[in-house]
Amino acid sequence: MNLLQMSFTGAVMILAVTVIRALAINKVPKKTFLVLWGIALVRLMIPFSLPSWFSIYSLWNREIPTVGMNTAAGMLIPVIQAEQQATIPHNTVGSVANVSAPEIIWILGCVLCAFFFAVAYWKSYKEFQMSLPVRNDGIEKWLETHPTRRTITVRQSSLVSSPLTYGVIHPVILLPKTTDWNNEETLHYVLAHELVHIKRFDIIAKVVLAVALCIHWFNLLVWVMYVLANRDIELSCDETVIRQFGENTRAVYAKVLISMEETRSGFTPLCNNFSRNAIEERITAIMKTRKTTVVSLVLAGVIVAGTTTVFATSALAESKGPMDTNYYETETSEGVLTSYTDDNGETYYVLDDGNTTRTLSAEEFEQQYPSPVIEWWTYDEYKNWLDNEKETLQSIIGQKGWTSAQGEFVWTQEMVDETIAEYEKVLQDIKNGMMYSKTVDGEQDIMVGYNPEDIVTSSSYDYFVKLENGEEKLFGPYETSEELLAAVDSFCNDQVKLGNMDQSEAREIVSQCVQN
Image (tube, rainbow, N blue to C red; front, side):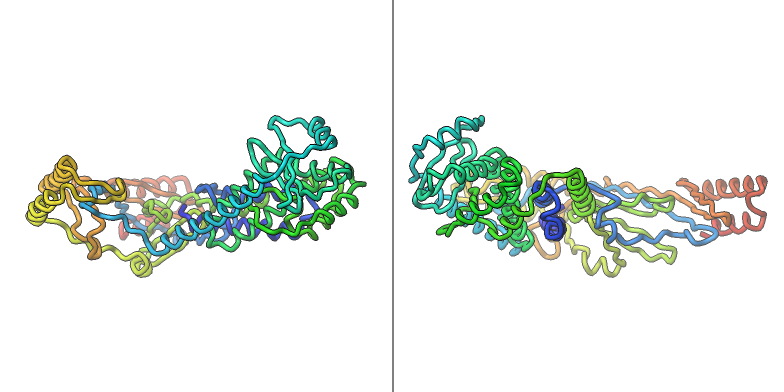
């Protein structure tokens, strides 16, 4: 699964979560959506395929035609199985790995996004370093009554206008300098909210979200996820605080939230702000917070399980029936390529990327994936080239070179000798019958090779029949058509004796087998 496939499947999951969130944001615990965003992140960041019958991608699969299923008698199918081992020799001197224009644009986008987050965080961190410790009896008492494995520090700064939390190993709760230190009720709400962030390691979640955004910056739905997931982190903390202090504190907590709404002077992407997200949505969610019920928990479980099963899994490959013996499978960089021949002798190709399948005719396949035009080295041609290359290599000793594997280096006599030895090995391979490409589609950047002796072919014969009573029977594979015909004839005779078919049906089946 490549990056675009990961981004697409992740986007489908994000779209599903966004719709479900809009419908059920105040009907289930807010942690439900944190779990769903976590699953979406896994889909975006980890290349994997988890097949499921209930996957949405299974609905997109196209049914592959089955040969001979609707006829009284099947057809004789020669099955060719080939195995080929290809050897890719070392790159030629000074070759550079080709990077396509889209890849360059993607890399630049990743770098720019990462640079933006890094600069924003560094700017905020420098401001945070100018903060001062809080010397307040109420704060110190609160810290004593809320011990954690990690030491929490409470600081104050005139550069922030709302509470926030930063730091993982040594977490810091940073409060505005204008905080009313005598209002213990407000302080307890604020500190409880930030403590939830610290205990849940929400900063790490924000970092992972930022990394996903940097990688999938071209995907608009990933930006949507970044915004909504950060909101849901805050909503979940609000919900936890309300449950901790009691539902009767909802109005008071909402007033605290309004009073602490920041007029932000900067962007702090990797910190937990008390009120940095959609204040109206948070207040609405706070006022609608209810006691967790069995129904809401069951609904949350159904939402998580159902959404994951339908949108986070891939299409389940259908089990192949008896006639699948004339299918050929090949692993490609884009998925599994399967080819089959119908009863009219037409060849079709099916490309399965783990999520969807596409059926192409032979003409469409050749148009979309044209066969490369390869010019092969002859022994004399490669020998002449190598003689000239040896002189060139000797002349560049002491000069700088570059390869994708080593980066920049300086040519030495030892390196030249090793390179020549590799080329001489290729020359010897060509002499022994190996095939190495001189050009592929006119390009010299890629060299492919194979040993003709490694190609092993074999033929086998199969025959599929569907009886008038609906019973299906597959014969084979057999090495010869005579063996297959004998097996079919024996089966038909037995069926006539058992009364399962009449003589005319038996003769028709055997006749069809002979003709095919």
